[in-house]
View 1 (tube, helix red, strand yellow):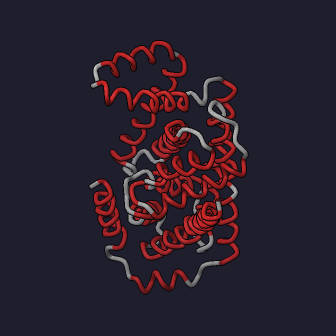
View 2 (cartoon, one colour):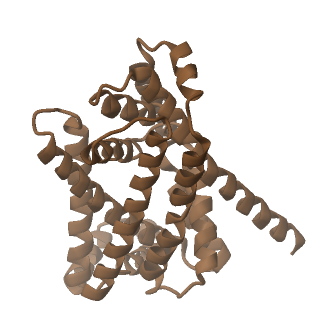
Length: 316
């Protein structure tokens, strides 16, 4: 049902993005792309993945110190799965993939991904607030941005509370578990323990600062990659314009949509670029190229790494 809902979300946003679009003009816009800029955009985007792996290793360190190469491969495979599966199911697959390869609890790995995504969510909140300040007269983001921001703020507050008040939080969780039937409680205790250990991946000010610095670098690289794709079409925007485009694109990937974020991804470009008098046709072309060059490159690398892993498994 959740998967079907994601596809419906994609269909709805595809309609919003392509209505009143002259597709022949979009094809003409595709012919104006400068390949060198796309190569640079792809390189910049891919360079963010080792940084993501460094941040993830920091969060996972409370469970086990893992080689960076292992984590880079898992990040690529997880993001590939996000691009080909609906409703961001790739996060679940990433936890399964690394847990199986490294021999650690999948629940603990899933918790580390929750912490990782919380850092990304807080960064998204900062970008959204910036857009609200710079464009106070426009309702670019609407209720979706507010709801998304509140969700990530609640996650951050919960993680911070558990890290600072572990004993009190653990007693509250134990009291809650006692209300469950014995069979269910027995299955949950072990997994919940691993999950809560993973949640405590960031527990000191130094670790918080380091993870925050990694997050800023990742978002800066992603934003530069989007800006390079836009510039490859000869589109010039003020700096705040590129921030607006990136904010809407980042927000679009948080929606439970179909594979590859199709629909919300397109509408984010159409809406943001339209604010600077860029035609819907050009904006649609930019969105398609961004999907193919950025998400497509990650998907290709992730599939290659997954294929290699399956070949190794078959030889054991």
